Length: 153
Image (cartoon, rainbow, N blue to C red; front, side, top):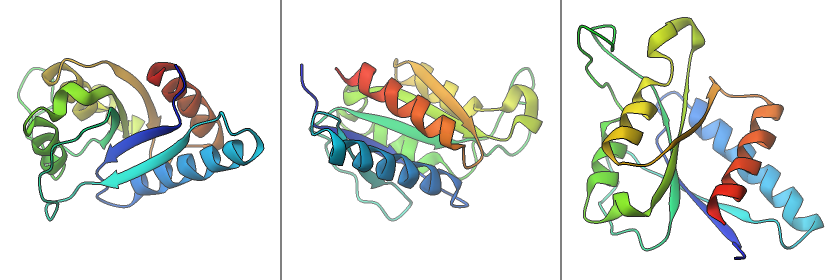
């Protein structure tokens, strides 16, 4: 099956996720310019101001981890700032179009690293596909693009 466009829904609090998905989109465009069979990437940022909509196409969700209180493992967790994306995915039948979740965070937070993405994957019964730290690297962009293409087929 040929996939011409990969859709990404994301939330970005401090700009790290936005920076990463923009690099991912630029990378996809450069590949597409050389080979039209390489899928482009369509981005949709979700925030507190986003109106809920019924997604009609499959997509991947990119979410950073921001937690307030608890260690996220055995003494609770309180999601902080990324709830708008979770509520958007939960709206209508949007969750059934989610092909997987990619998480980001800071490895200094040990067990909490990418915890939000892992929780989204479990809640929406979709795979936790990959992770990258902070704004990611060029190698992360290439690795995750290849993964998205393989998963979208």
